[in-house]
View 1: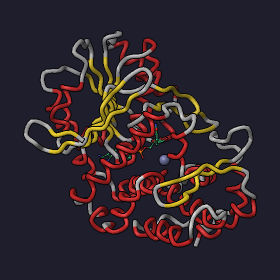
View 2 (view 1 turned 135 degrees about the horizontal axis):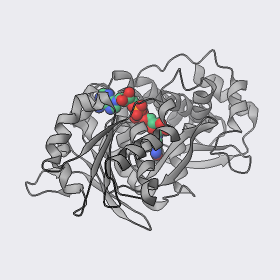
View 3 (view 1 turned 90 degrees about the vertical axis):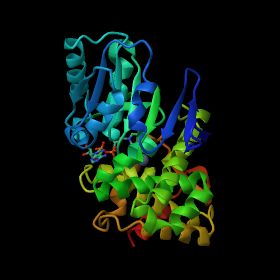
View 4 (view 1 turned 180 degrees about the vertical axis):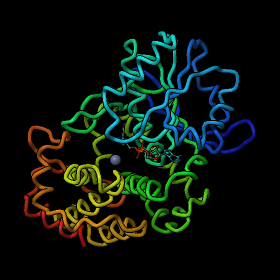
Length: 366
Ligand SMILES: NC(=O)c1ccc[n+]([C@@H]2O[C@H](COP(=O)([O-])OP(=O)(O)OC[C@H]3O[C@@H](n4cnc5c(N)ncnc54)[C@H](O)[C@@H]3O)[C@@H](O)[C@H]2O)c1
Ligand SMILES: [Zn+2]
């Protein structure tokens, strides 16, 4: 947390890795000073965005870029477009527009845009700088921070990628006002995840102020975003490449990913699938005696307080179990679960019996 010249509290968190150090800023109106985060020596500047985001917020970004000239590269959103062919097309456009090693990219959009823009920056001329300006809640608290970039293959999500840390991450909660309610709620489930894995105070706030957070009241929402960004920064700083601590971010993701894959990425937004996965993992934590029943009830109640996810009952537990072994998070054929031990702490467990996992999935359907 920092205090700027006018004594306004401005949360800026820092990610430090072996190769770099950068800020993640959570601040209403930060778009107005984007220029100050760009490299001093800059030839061409490219903004990768989708037409909807540009229509809503392009003018504000343009104002913040002031005297910088830049080109807008439109990317047609959607998970099925997060592909190498689209990345190649963006790169071809950059070459036509005279991009060189002193060029810089800005990823201005949801997680799909920040993922593909980050990967484009990682591989264009073997690496150019990227500034990430995430515009969905999910991207502000998760995808935009941490330098994991990538695209999908037909065989699975995010199977091609690179670690490429940005110059900075600018999360402006003002842009969330235009986000569809369902996308907003899906992002909030990842915020709840942050509370469960690492911050009991954040969790307590989310549980008691659900109505204010859901209504996007700045007093409740901004501190929840800031806490989540701080947690992501801390975790990435401790473990950039997901060797150890970063795996706690996968709470709810073992079964959540199985649910997304089983339904062809059509029925659930990522955050919704993770909400289901967190409920199943919480039931599992209680049945495996990792977590007390009272804390388990509090986690389930908090997730439920943020609204119902689409129906899951038609999806058989067996089908999800069959998917677990093929998740890319599987190491040496073992399925890992991130299980809470109390609110704010987790442990990683493997070798859990199939029957126990199936029972937890059934309980989560309820
Ligand atoms: N790199 C990582 O560490 C990481 C972590 C989590 C998720 N991800 C990736 O993030 C992606 C999902 O991101 P997402 O949930 O942000 O989805 P998304 O990028 O598809 O955005 C959701 C929709 O909201 C629109 N949108 C974005 N900002 C808006 C705004 N301010 N107002 C109105 N509409 C807006 C988008 O155009 C899109 O239609 C997935 O591909 C996932 O793999 C990456
Ligand atoms: Zn996630």
